[in-house]
Image (cartoon, rainbow, N blue to C red; front, side, top):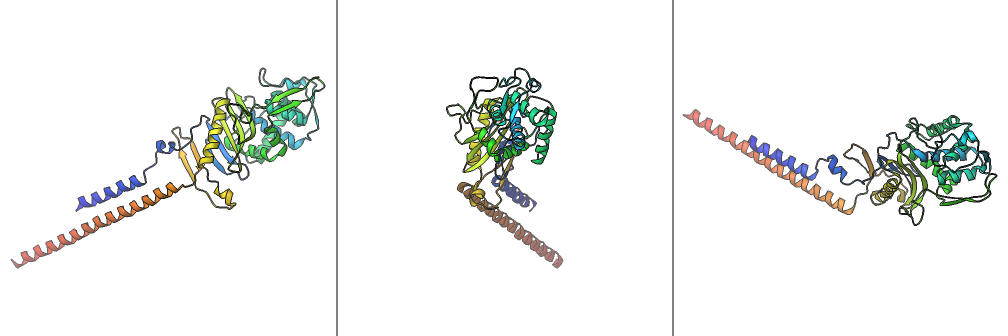
Length: 367
């Protein structure tokens, strides 16, 4: 009798683990997108909904995507036609050999011109020039940056300069950078600058000829290996310590999404990571709540890869998913019936044994 009970329980457990297998890291890893970046996030710009996340709260060095915050602070505090005179102190505060527009001491540019050159060419000298103009010096401007970051809800971000040149105390997270990216996109001027592919800087008091600047973001440059038609602009970044960093925007399923990549191998892999994520979200994301303009909650699947990195994404159930679910429910019902029959047999045998014992006891008493 005990053997039958044991067999029934084993049979039930076997069916349950077959129909609803225990998820392992390897199993969950099979459905996720493979990117090189150590941290990444994709959010809906309007709502802030997270459509994909990987190590979103881990502190990383941002490199030149810092300049998004620099531009945002400048636009909020300065008129576009204001004139900036670049001091020797500001221009010489950058790391020698780093990306620069080679602005000359005493050269005068408008705020608008400065922002175009800084964002398209990732010019560190222009970034520091704006920092001195707006904040008095780098520490003063960094204070404004950190105040804005807190205002936006950033909790793991600290800026010490306007360019993103490496400093151990200059860091952010993918989640925080996404908040900054959303705020940047809301600024129509900054949005326009980030999607501009070419900018001609007119002659200044130090240069007689026109200088032309090409956007370093290859995802918006038609003909580039990494050109991605839905891309709406963004900002690149790279240092040897930070690796490839990238903030981009894209129109996916009639929604503007922002993608942040931190600590990719280099600039090229940051591009490929971003494109993979946009395509992945386009295929797997549940956009029905936006289409219906309702407050319906979408299901979120959470996975863990081999390195323990959390990965979240929205996934809408397909017709095949519903069919499989129906089959699973049917199998569960069948298993329950089988177990019920086995338990019924056990119960009947128990009653028969009890009756046999009573008959045997009655015969012994008669004797």
